Each structure stands twice: as structure tokens, then as C-alpha cells.
Length: 137
Length: 402
Image (cartoon, chains in turn red, yellow):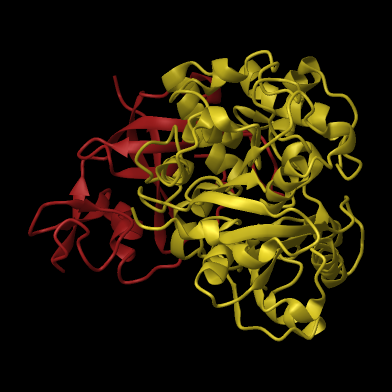
């Protein structure tokens, strides 16, 4: 990967840490309720499905589909390598589970809604930013 | 049926400060100009104001708020029975809905509501948008880390609402075949109407060609899909309906409000990203009245980004779900002399980002038939809708004359 672009990093909390550090082990992790099996994102202390406090991080496959995207051309601050693709992806295990992310290894004009993508991680300091690239054919 | 309490409220006066780009004027002074104008417009004295409401209060990055409750309260030496200001409300007009409820419940008689911005001057002074505080990104180079809801967008360099709303627009384009040319009608209509508004910040003619060739911001949005930061303040007086008739103007009745958010309060987890919270606020509004969309004579619908107006047209039932593109096609239907005159002051795209309150102000101007060159004359407006907000924030008011 070329020199890593500017990013604002997330502040880690006990709740968010499994999500932001799963990439160290190559895993995209979300909280999941061990009682009702709901996936929960963003992380919170109580399951919104059954209100139990039995949430544990669990890895998903890292496969997803593009739900929407935009190609950002605006230099909001100096040091951005615009244009770049911001996407919302729907996680294959539960498409109601979405992430805003960036698409990489893909020309902006090649992105389509519905295209299958696969997670890749960009390590930064103590966090692993989950990005997505086109899935292998 | 439960009483529709907002009908105990009426709008009795409006005021606006000077509006412009980079005025370099004291934002509290602009705010007070608007407030005093609204009080006088209602035929009231400041001493008669016993309620105060604003969005978002004294908070946010430089320029986002020109004054909070405390500053206005003290500057006018008001004696208040009720007041509130804050961001966690259903969009900018949530503060006005709160005021309606305050007078309906007898907590106050005349509530001064205001919204004040000085984003153009703030940008000129700091030379950067609000994320500047994050320079360094919170990594080894220093800077601030993202927390709360922002941690789900800023690490992915989705810095602006332009990016967040563009994701909604793109999904709408995908599901319904909406086109850039259709989207452009919102911007072109705004610019046409701004020509008749002496306070609008952009009044030069804009062609479809200009629109399509403009610099890309975040696809599908170009420069003219994004509203214009400005300096200015807007105020309205919400009075208890039973005393409103004794004032200077014929009161504008609040027929119904919409403040619902039934989906998740999130930019990217919202269930249907071809809609927004507007869907829920719009549905609630029609649940509270026997009037129908066809009764509306003029629509003032938020356009922080052009797509938001398309979403409001659908949310308020002026067209079917997914049909806003064809609805605005060619622009004739939404023009000042069309079937549904839309954003008659130029919206925020050409009028300037007065942040929600400008739409309410203009709805009142039209109902009082004081729009001058931009007044809707094809028929005398009797019913108007004012709507503000986008993404997970939205509220709207249905207003009727006298």
C-alpha cells in the first residue's frame, strides 16, 4: 500500500475496542448477543433485541456488499488524496448491519451498488481500520 | 381523538437580520436584530416575551451558533416563564415545536424562537472547517481522536454532511433511476426564486449547463447541490392562539406538526436510505390533520443539500415514494407559478444557510402575502408547509392563514 492517507483515528473504549482491534488477528468483529443471537452495532452494553447484557465480540467472514457509495472530490482538509471512495457496506451475515468505510484497490468509476467486497485492514497505531476491496471472483 | 395541542399555538411575528456572506458583524448583534424585528412585527414589547427557544444553543464549532439562550435572555433582560435550547431535538424546527407545546400547556404566552449562524465569517477567520481540530488525526502526529457517533465516519474520511447525504442520494438514484438532471431542478428552482429575494446570497442566473459542469464535491453532488454558508439570524414569535388575535397581524395557525423518528437515529444504520427521518416526521404530520398534500399552496422544504428536498417531497406525500425525480423534472411544477411553489426565497442553496428557520420565515411571508417580487400570485396561499432537517434529524409544520 502507498503511504497511508490522513485519517482521524477512533478513540478506544472497552466497548469499541474489539471492533477497532480485531484486525490485528485478521478478524472483523461485532458484538453479538449470546442470548438471542442478534448482531449489534455500534457497540452498546445492552442487547437492543432482548435487553440482556450478554454481548460478546464475534468475528464475521468479512464479506459484504456495497449498499451505497460516494466518490469524494473535495479537499476538506489539506493532505487528503482525493478522489477517494466512501461506501456503506452491508455485512453478509446480517445485511441490516452496516459500516461506513472506504473502498480500496478499486478505481472509483468501477464501483457499483451491490458489488461484493471483502474486508482488509489498515493498521494505524493501536487500531486496525476496516476497509473493503472488491471480493475475489 | 386526542386534542391536537399545537393548534393552541400561532405564529404572530417574524424577523430576520441582515443576511450575507462574510459580514464580519457580531453574531449576537445579528441575533438581536432578528429577535427585536420579530417582536416588533408581532406588535409586542420585549417585556411581553415570557418564553425563549432556540436550536442548537451556544454550542458547536465556530459559526454554527451565533447566540444561545442565556445571551439573548440577558441582552433583552427578559423575564421568562419557560425556555429551552439544545441540539438533541428533531432538527432545527424542533425548537419551534417545543415553543408551540409550551404555549399550548400554558407555560408561556409569547415565545421568541431564534436560529443564528455566522459560518461564512467563521470560515473566513479560521480558513478551515470544523474538523481542523482533528489535524494530526489522533495518531502519533497528535490531534484529537473521534468518539461517539463521529468515530463511525471520520476514520473513513467522511468529513462532511455532503458525504453522508450523498450516500443517501446515490442509493435513491440506484433504486429509482433518479438522475442528476432531475436533482438539478432543485438547485435551478432555488436560484430562480433567489432572484426575487433581496436577502439571498446568490442571485445570478444559473443554467442547467452551469449546474452539470460545476466542480464535483461528493458524487452525485456538485457545488450547486450544496447550500451556501452565510451569516444571519431568523426569529419567529409563537403565541398562545387565544391571545394571538389581539396582536398586530392576523395570526398564522399551526395546523399540525411532525417530529417523529421511528427508524434508528443514525446516518448509516437507518433502515431505508432512500428516505431519512423526514419519512417519519412527514407521516406524523398528516396523521394529525384532515388537510391533505393537495391542499398545500406553498412548500418550503429544507435543501441543505439538493437531495434532501427530493426526500421531503416524498416524505410529505407530494409524490409517491421514489417518484420525486420525475415529479420535479423540467422544473415547471415546482416553480413559483407552478402546481407546488417550492422554496420561494431561494432555499439555502441560493438564499444562504440560515439553517431551517429560513423556511419557516418564508412560509409566513407567503401566507401574509408579503413576498414582493417572489410572492406566489397564481393563487393566494392559505396553507404552507415548512420542513427542516436531513439524515436522522427532521421536523415539519403545517401552517394556515388566519
